[in-house]
Image 1 (tube, rainbow, N blue to C red):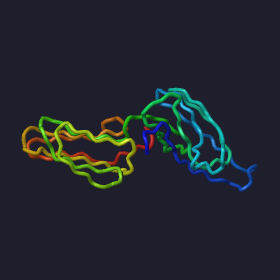
Image 2: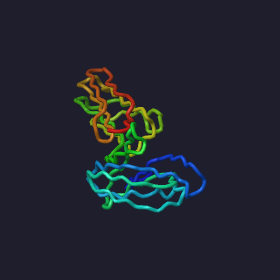
Image 3: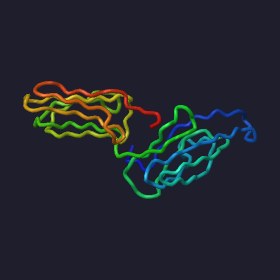
Length: 196
C-alpha cells in the first residue's frame, strides 16, 4: 500500500432487521489526537450500504454522531497534504469509541552503538524473518506492519564495542536492549495497543 493519507477502520455492525425503517442507530465517538483537521467518511471499497456522510473533526476535538444501518469502514482524510499514517485505537470498554492517531511509521527498527558493523535479525511485516549485515547505525521501518509480534537482534561482527537495538511502535520507543563484545542484543514483544 502506498504512503497513506487516509486509513480505514473495520467496524462490524449487526443489523436488527432487513427493513431500513427498523435499523438501529449506532452512536460513534471519535477523539482526534492529531494536529490535523480530518474528514471522517465511509470507505468506498467496503461501504456495503452505499452510505454517504462526512463529519469534520478538528485537532484535539471529540465528536459523536449516529448512523443507521451502517456496516463497513471509516476513512480518515486530512485536509492538508502529509506523509503521515492515520489510524485509530479502539476503547476496549466501549466498542464504538475511538481515538484517531497519526505517526510516521507503525514499526521502526533501529540498531546503533559503538560497533562498526553488526549482523541483524528481525521479524518482518508478514511474520517472516529477515537477516542482514550492515554498517551502523541501521534503520528499517514500516508504514504498515502485518504481524502482531516484533523482534530485533544484533551482534557486533568483530566483537569491538557494543550494539544497541530499539523497536519503535507508532513513533514511540517500545522495546530496547544492549550488548557488548560478541553478545547479542535482543528486543521483542507484542506491539498492538487497543487504546492509549
